[in-house]
Length: 288
Image (tube, rainbow, N blue to C red):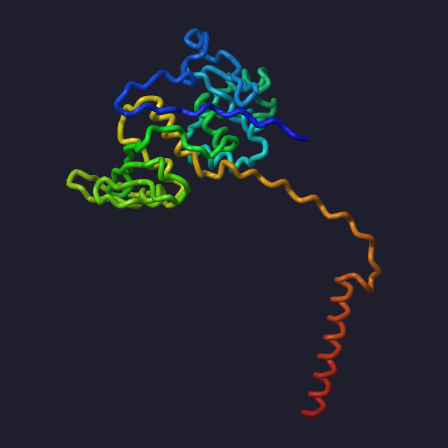
């Protein structure tokens, strides 16, 4: 049965770095958001599906388990977990009281013992990495993110989205040696500057560049952060759909014992054993 394509979040259009950033409608607070109280239950429409929300520590958060069981039901738990970690999305665990509220709201089954909550923006990023298209956000010409990492002696460079056309594309230009590296190689590239401090690298997994590579600006504009998040979500296996398990073969009719594979193997084994026994008897007679 044909289904209509899922709607995706709108692309982010960044102005030139020198101009002021316009307000992002995706980031505008929802009506009544400021008046929300702790543990207040709400509802957010995500890709056309209603998801239960709960106000935790002043933020409206969505139930990750409900998202996994509805929007991402075609993906395994490990796929969702690994993607969440790669995108730097951290879950906030519910208290027993909050879990009971989610149960009564229908977001969690009665048998559930815990539930992780993520923000609406994080939920959009996670779902887009699975359901959206691997298209870069619309950025100004010759735009580059100023990025850095702290693995080993650390390094700083310019991440050029226009060059990021595959997971191994050499799209980062080192600020010290002007060489180009792919993201998963750049976190292993460092320069020992006079003020550098050595940090034991823990980036054994090449996919961990999304966790180690950060914007150099410590207080970036929201639009810049969102564009950087969208770029990091690219080429992370989001377009791969889990294949359905093959249908079990139809039961075959019972074959006669003589034609059964195990029966033929057993017969050959008996014949081979008798041949060995005869050979041993002949050899024994010759020796005597």
